[in-house]
Image (cartoon, rainbow, N blue to C red; front, side, top):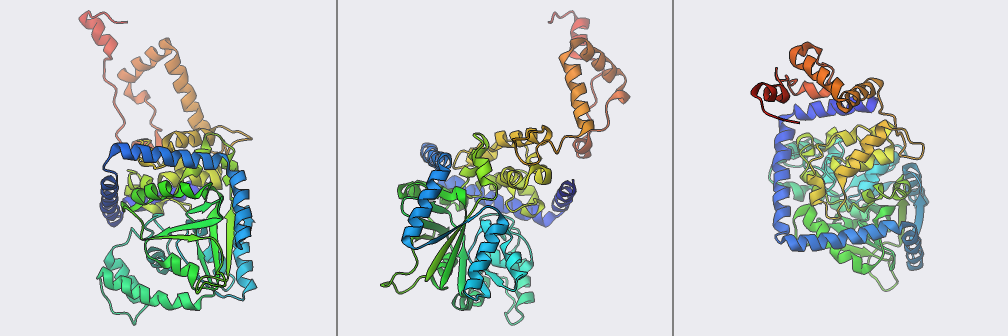
Length: 471
């Protein structure tokens, strides 16, 4: 239960930090407003969402077949495909590619899969310098932090914090809180690294099986530099990102961008199908694709939980979540915070390690209402809660690990009382007349709430006294 204690500590710290609450509330409100303006027509939203959901559901249902087709076409195009069952396998593959080119520098575009792998720390421990080129990722890397949002990694920091961080890390840079100047400073600091680093690494938003094409969505252009200037490009990707056809991309891209940032179209959309050809003036000499499983195949085999893998990482569920907007991303253990993280992370790491995350939800349904690919997040969180207390040898890793004898006993007593009218009446009689018999061990529920005090007379007693007939 070590992770539970760490999570509770993180929650207390986040709730007690007025800066986090103020910052996230303002920025979540902004992102929600931008998304609403991006979908002014409810009928268009429904049609686009239905199309995107159908595409992703079909992709996941045929995942093994599409992955084989992707590997075949990527290989035909000259992209070298590597399979990684675990995060350690993926890290080892990246390390072998780096060592094969005697490379000690890696320039990175934004990639949540590389965060899941723990790639930066893995390579740093082996003498390889990894530099994040996405501005948000660059900021959190300088601060020694994890991304707090999958779209805006440094959303928890204001301009003054970033200005102080830049001045601390780069004393020669003039202190300024002007956002354009700070962005320009970061661009100048990073630009030479694109030319110096022999290897660039990015994530993949979608991989097209029929053409062997890797698609990368971005707004800053750093991903394009990472895939063009270094001699070697490594793309790391969760196996669920595969789609069947190139014609599947437009609806997915449309709903992704509008759901994520409220833009009508992204600034850069990169399509990579091969290394540099003889008649081309730029591009990498080698392209490697690392396909990471890390538990995804197991999720895919569950006909209910496989909906988790539809996720296109837009972050809309986080922006609308009343829990995430108060805690921020750093209160959550694991790589991905918020509702989708509470759903995905326990399935990857096991309920024995991260089984507390499905409880970090009000089950209000806001996340599922805005999910562009129709993931029923509250229903699936309930499924994980149930598996956490019910041992199933064929279920999720760590199933049953959250079952507690005292809690189980309380629910057995509750079942006994509420399933037998005579016992229920006796219990209510004593509860209303002798409040001291009420259980006081409600745990977290009463830490932020007052214990309800039953009325001295129940509705039946009042009806009897007034002569009102009732059943």
